Image (cartoon, rainbow, N blue to C red; front, side):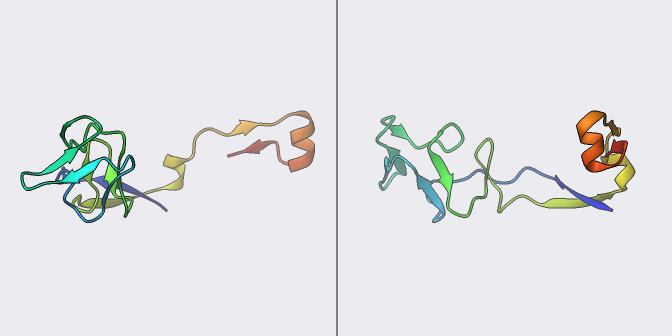
Length: 102
């Protein structure tokens, strides 16, 4: 059996005030009213910034925090996951010794 992980529900968006958030341009300035980006001269927007990363490597596309997302594991039979067999000829057939590989 092969396990497949699916996302069940939308999680919370990543915040630049999170301790795991990092700006790779070192442009984030922490102020009273929020986090300011010196690169764009605007409030830091994690969802649209290409320089925003998570130290824990949990930042998903769209600025969603992977720590807040619930996941569900589904088991699938191998026949469903494996595609059609590939037929071999010539040198590959001689090296592997089988006519078809999965």
